[in-house]
Amino acid sequence: MDNTPRLTLPYLAAAQSQKHVTHNEALQTLDTIVQLTVVDRDLTDPPASPAPGDVYIVASPSGGGWAGRELEIAAWLDGAWRFITPLEGWRAWIVDEQTLAIFSGGTWNTFSGSSSDELQNMSLIGIRATADTTNRLAVSASATLFNHDGDDHRVKINKAIPAATASILYQTGFGGRAEIGLTGDDNFHFKTSSDGSTFKEAILIDAATGLVTMPSSNYLAQAAFNLLQDSGRFGGAASGIGIGTFSKPSYIQEFNSSTFAHYAKFINNNTDYGGTAGTLNADVRLLIDKIRNSSYRRNSLEFNVARLTKGSGTSFATTVSGATYHLSLAFAQVARLAVATVHFYAKAKTGNLLLRSFPGQRYYIDDVLQPEGNLVLTPAEGWRSIRISDQVDPYSSWGYTPSHLNAYQESAGDEALICCLAMMPGLTRVDPNIGVIPSLTQWS
Image (cartoon, rainbow, N blue to C red):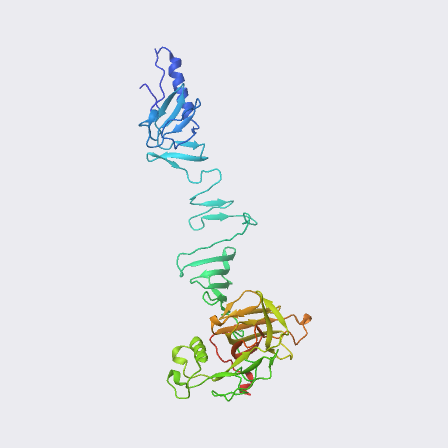
């Protein structure tokens, strides 16, 4: 045997002359492949000016002085290229990529996670802990920090299907005590447990509506009872299905010579939907079509619709987006609730309708929270469900103003329609399709 079996290094023969030549050839091979460092592995032709000892991996398709040497190691030694065929498992540090490559399966493969600033496709990572196939990332530490990189920072937990779980589980002694997240569906759950096996649903937030429920608690939810004695029907203190002629309630106050007067009425057993009592006004029909299923548009509690018409006065002006509005309507100045919810339906008929916002007030249109500030309704929008959440600090309140409702209009003669007005104590969600909210006094 003239060469070693793995690296084919030449042996020194017993009677060989010029043994130093053979010895030096073996040293050059070792110098090339031990701690193998490669300048580049993307070149298909030799570089123009290699430095002595430079090593390359020949890329495909090779050409020039490297023709036919794909994937071999090319070393510039003594002014010529020397080629070495790699063996399975050889490793090379690729200088220009700052990564480690391994020769396996007849090709050079980048070692996963070998880059000096990257860890990619690692199967397990344990930091002062042992990771396993269930907990592929395990960390033992008194604190863990996820910091921003110049702006925001978001932690994402993704699941494959709605029926799966994406959650954070809080444990004591590796026994679950609380869990929050998307557990078994796409709603947001808050759960607690005393033993780690039986969990109680504490809070549930509906994914579609944002509605919050507390399945394990007894509390008043969506309490919609009206403090206005006429139930916002504008027909006196009627408690039956039918209602009489329009009556402007005393809790309404007009400003700037504006008027709040009868416009139309929703008729129970109307002819539009198969009844005999009368035909609906077109605007009233649009509203009932919006808030009732087609099978429930014929019969319902009657209510009057009021028309708010802007007068000629110019007091209490406010400017929004370059347009000047003047106060047309507000609740009368009586003792106000520190925390209240107001709901009604409104339609800007001619000209815009501005609902002014005061500190502590937030508006919802069709059950969707709006950005803080004033709300402008345009004629193109049609009927809207308006909910106002209003709360003031009693310590910094006069107790009677500002009003829960403040409606402004731009030009004399502008018209808006309002109906089904309700005021409720506290902050409560109101279904945008609720229609008339009955008064507490109707049962007295």
